Image 1 (cartoon, helix red, strand yellow):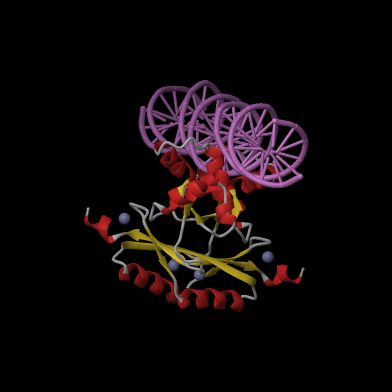
Image 2 (tube, protein in one colour):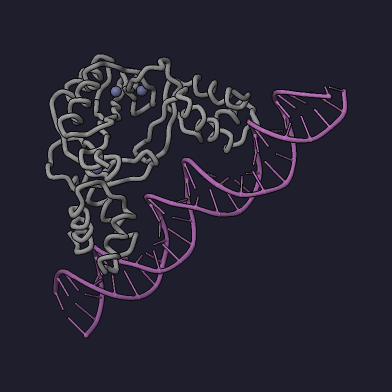
Length: 125
Length: 125
DNA sequence: CAAGTTTTGACAACCATTTTCGTTTTCGCC
DNA sequence: GGCGAAAACGAAAATGGTTGTCAAAACTTG
Ligand SMILES: [Zn+2]
Ligand SMILES: [Zn+2]
Ligand SMILES: [Zn+2]
Ligand SMILES: [Zn+2]
């Protein structure tokens, strides 16, 4: 893992929510780093390929990344306001999606499940 | 509903799967229509705003649309090969996501759930 | 038909992401 | 330490889906 990639990973870990490549680039430059935008993209590509970070798409199609605590398969409960995310897992959806796929004769069934809302903190305002 | 918008809606209904704006534009032009790409985008925007079509994002961030049979809240089982989609619904996920949100003090909880796989047809090949 | 309104589509602008390519760093080896 | 190959880097250009602009075309209403 190169120094640059570590820097990107660290910047991502510093946040509890999902961040875009541009966000992270801005963070790193604000911290005085001379990193290039291209390198941020490359680092995120490598990190998501190796499974070290999770990636999902916003409604606008922008890719956002998160350094999650667990290596296991899981989903997220994401705050629409501050973008903070909580990792969630449970056999219920896993079983349900598998059954749905099997019932319709589909093979190699996978799924994307994300839950959105306004977190307790942001709900006060 | 203008003639152009109807044409886009019809082109979308002719497919059982999700199509991108560019796909539909190509379909319509191939059928001899002189419609412009901008108009296709505008029609899809309007159709999804009014809830007449469902929209989701591919892994590559491209928006794809589908004219679904039901008006009710539902999800999709999508074939990764031919992109055919089956509409699915069930109280299991609905309840599960609501519970997860409530457990963490989130308000205004919504969710995105999509199931992917290879359909029976495409599994043969 | 005239005047006003809406819709349309060619083209340009946007913006996130990827490619290109010359430069810099890193690494293995002498 | 010195050296050459290989990998990493970053600025700038290219890409591609999507949106904005604006003048022309189509439709409405009187
Ligand atoms: Zn929040
Ligand atoms: Zn899962
Ligand atoms: Zn299929
Ligand atoms: Zn649902």
